[in-house]
Amino acid sequence: MAILAAFLPATSMVSANELATPEVSITTTSKRLPQGAYSNNLAETLYNLGLAQQRSDEHEKAVDTLRQATHMIRVNSGLYSSLQIPIIESEIESLMYLNLFEEVDIRQTYLRQVQARSLVDNETIARGLIKHAEWQNKAYQLGITKDDDEKLFRLIDMLNLYRRALSRLAEELGDQSPALLEPLHGILRTQYLLTGLISKSLGVYERSLSRFDNDGARAYRSQNYKQGRYIISAIYDLEKKSSKNSVQTTQNSLTMLADWMLWNGKRGDAKRTYMEATRAGLAKTIEDSEESQVPAEIFPVPLPLPQLDGFKPLPDTVAQESADLLISFDITKTGRAINVKRVDDSDTEDAVARKIIRLISKTRFRPQLEFGEVVIAEGITYGFDTSSW
Image 1 (cartoon, rainbow, N blue to C red):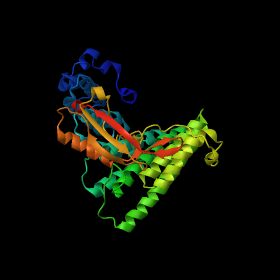
Image 2 (cartoon, rainbow, N blue to C red):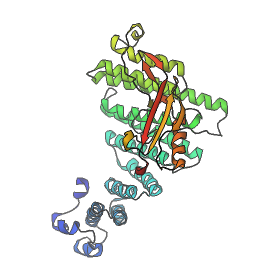
Image 3 (tube, rainbow, N blue to C red):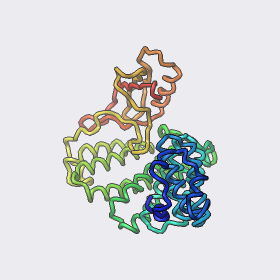
Image 4 (cartoon, rainbow, N blue to C red):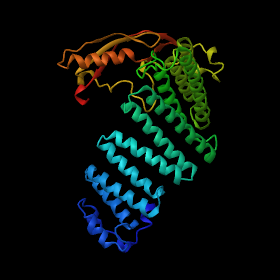
């Protein structure tokens, strides 16, 4: 990193050949540096050594080396110097490779503290906030926290991180910048997860919070639903300003809105909005799209929801001839999977098949439309290659 290289005089640098060898002696290296064992020069050398160890897939060594580099920076430049940031980020990469997710969580918290006390540029701060929100999402999906209250805390934190990033980017780049789309989509993803956490009947990410009484849960769900609609509208307003295909942008926005309605149990509203999307290409505006009589066929097959980056409602499917597990089912007009059953004769364990059957049964699907009308989709078959799981 250039910001770290600024400390290091060319005369003190370890050779490229030495850095390419992870077994470089730290003690020997420190003796060669004029400022001794606690110099920033040594921090730079340790950082480069840690990167070399990463490239050699020696991630346990890399973690130790990079932590030493961070310590050197703390000693010489203060507890919350921004010079630590690229080193900690590299350490987190190795911890992720080692699947040490609880340690990643600890280092992410420390990284946030350093960034909060050292960064001043709005755009840089926003990028850091978005990365932390993405980690909270991953931590939630990995199930690092088991308690419902802790899960809720992660999602609220994720939501606030995206909101703060949105404010920083708007302040720096203006409220019409396309850069605002990233945190807006992040907010929408978070609200999908929040809906799933507080409502027991809305998809694969369902959870229930016993500490919520029924009235409180309904009120929170209603508020979350309205906020989701507002975010989708904001995404549409930004995208239509830069889009070269206004029809597709309108259809995408209406589809996103209909998906959100269906996820929240608004089946009638969802059906009408899906139908509006099919007519959008024949109307001048969303408002008069209901006047069109000849719909576009843009929903040929059902799709598992949510259809958003960062979500994976079901395992990846493969062609049937490559699959060792085949699951057949139908999709109702309201997006529910019914008649879910196994239809292969492979030796894949029944327990695996039952798990996938339960997962498909819980998943909400975007329904199929024909000529602008929602229809039952029959005889859908998904193939899975369980050898890759």
